[in-house]
Length: 451
Picture (spheres, rainbow, N blue to C red):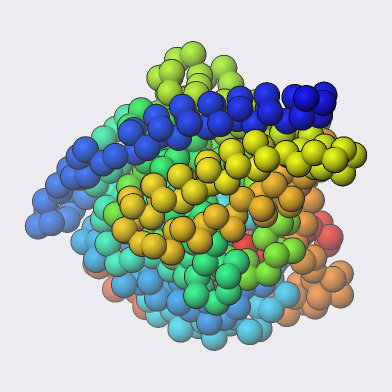
């Protein structure tokens, strides 16, 4: 046996062993033994916690934003609900203005227009500092939430030990292409395997941004740390959901997953935007994994296995794949053992997922394996080598577009408090372009989120 064959065989055997132990433990802990949520009294609505829903948006499609706000307005939560739509210096503010105007007389909705694009994190914080609800729900502007999402997340947050909770994500455009269908299955596995297992120990490692609720009292304690994240001396602006989750865990709060709180979000339908998204997420994961390593001794041993499986597993797979490809290219031998092991591991995982989800389409998730080996693993290696890069890698706003938006944005659409006794109609009033927002650091070349 050649050196390359030995390296490939040892690496793939180690990967198979680690992955088998990790995925078996994950599947066991992901089983829902008790899916019930603590009830609340729907009659005594005054005792229910107030909820602020924050929707940061940048250059969003008006139809997508309208669908998002419609799903929020249709919530069945009987307590106080206030919505803050934060337009992060969009260049298409004229296109979304009719959407804003349609809620001008809704006392539950307030639209905040920022002068320039400052990034999703600072846009969130702009609304957090203006709001006052007991709980804060972040909803991405390309996401629609089921009518009972707020109610179900609030019921989970009734436990004062819980600092954050997330719902289950699906792809709203999953039928658009083979890629969106694949991402939808990827989301299902991430939620109903990874997060479902982590929530057994109150330590979901990332409460995903499209639909995550936070306890305000905990959030305010962590807000300065959240706003001023640095990595190697440089500001770190993306990966806000994972970073905030790690801060919650560091502060001693539980983070939970609520599988029945369904949120459907738009996912990339082309390969290049998907890879850019994955590159950002990989950098964020590596950064905050380093930040959260010291938490592991205080958590269940499964969480240590989970971190090893998610980080060491791909490394072993990459080493095995590289050695196998080199063996095939440089020698006359074919790495049958490596290939058969990877195929077997893939089919077992897809079969288990299809059985658990009750959908045969999950057998098609096998397509993710070659994408992972030939595209995602090299991309993750690049992410590890460029951790200091904070570029969003998305479409940028041309300077002329930003200047035009600055000149055209002159109003803030607002509504009064949800207090039924206020009797004040919604209005559109001059706001001096939100002087408080001028404290935020902005740049004409700030890249924005599109996923």
